[in-house]
Image (tube, rainbow, N blue to C red):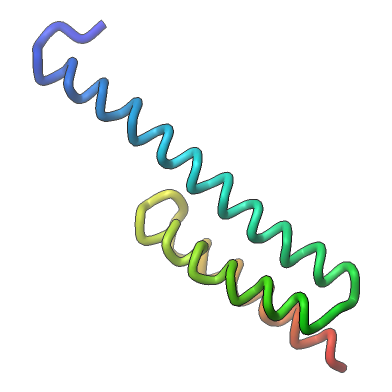
Length: 88
């Protein structure tokens, strides 16, 4: 248990940040899942629309430190490549 007042404050902040990060991570996974489902259904226009809403969520999660920047970039790139491959 934290003894000093600054350690107690840091513990409170950590709890708050953890909740915020959980919400961001959950929202990010939901958006990615929507894109995956649209790709699986075979509807390219729906997949493109889902991707347009998922991309900023992924980038924002990286900016906020929820995931690593390269991880977000890789997810965006791979989802986009799979959507483009649907047209062929």
